[in-house]
Structure formats: C-alpha cells, structure tokens
Amino acid sequence: MKYKGERTSQDVVFIVFSSLRESCRFFTCTKCSDINNVKTYKMIPKYKDFLSKELPEKLRTLPSNQAPNFGLMTAHHMVEHLILTTRSMLKRRGEPEAELNKSQSFFRKFMEAGCPFEYRPKEGETLRELRTESIEAAIKILEEATEEFYDIFQSNPNHKSYNLITGAFNLEELEFFNYQHGRWHLYQFGLIEEFSPIKL
Image (tube, rainbow, N blue to C red; front, side, top):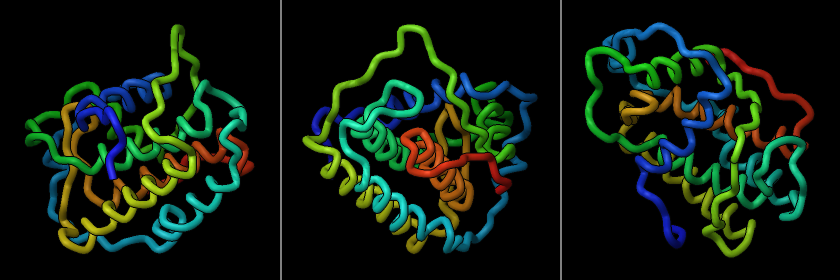
C-alpha cells in the first residue's frame, strides 16, 4: 500500500538522514571494500519480534493527540516517518564508489556507535503534511513495510541497500538500525522509559 503524494525514495532518504547529521559528528572516511564483503545474514529473533509485533502493539496504545517528550512530530507523523525510513533504507540506488563520501562516513560511524540518536532542535523546523487518514491506517502500512523488509531476507539474504547519503548496508545492519530507530521513537513518546545505543 502506498500513501497519496508519496515521495521518491531518494527524496525520503535525504529528508530522513539530513536530520541525523544534527545528532552526531562526522568521522574520517573508510573504504567501501570494508563493508561490501559477501555475508549470508541470519535474522535476530529479538529484533524481528520487536519490529513485527512489539512496535506496532505499543504504537496502538498511543493516542493520536499524544504530545511527544521532545520534538515537533505528532504520534501520527512519527508512524509515517517510520514507514518512510523502513522502505527507503531498503532500496539500492546505484553502486558504491571506492571511498565513502562525508555523509556516508558519518552514517557508517553512527551505526558502528550503536545508533546514538539524540534530539537537537533545528531552527525553522516544520511538520510535513500527513499522507494517511489516521494513525491506525499508518500503523497498518508500517506493518506491511516491515513484512516487505523481511520478505527480502527470505528471497535474497545477501541483499545490500545503497544510496548516496547513507552508503551501503547489509540486512543485518538494516534490521539493527530499524530496531534502534523504532526504540528511539517509542522513547520520544514515553512508551519505553530508556533509550541507549547498543553495539551491533
């Protein structure tokens, strides 16, 4: 299922990860050859249970008018944000260069640090128009996006995503990112009490 006025994957990736740059420092570039070794991925039950069951269950306890503990997003906006991130991170747009660019180097180090999300307000930040009719409709699409994500595990366990902003990531890394990203936004709305980076 798509929502009306859905952006292209590259637009979404830019929107999602330009904000992440406010949370971390940039680091020295590393070679793409270090992250492109073929590896057959095995799903982590803890992460899959969270993304497929626990996350949507917790989101369904959240009133659409619930105010966040930080940030501008409403609960409804947050769920749509999770959909866009889940789907956009899975795409492969082009092929990696020999060296990571500055943005890709940042995101690689962000992942290696355990996804240390941190809220830093941005001047002039505004909310985007909602694309789904209700938070429940958005949660259902998030469940579909998660199912699509795991379908790729089954059909091509060596799949790697790639785009110019985040670089290349295997399914193990993508699952870990989605797990941490989902936990971060549950923490944002008080659905879990603590959030901290964890090692991949």
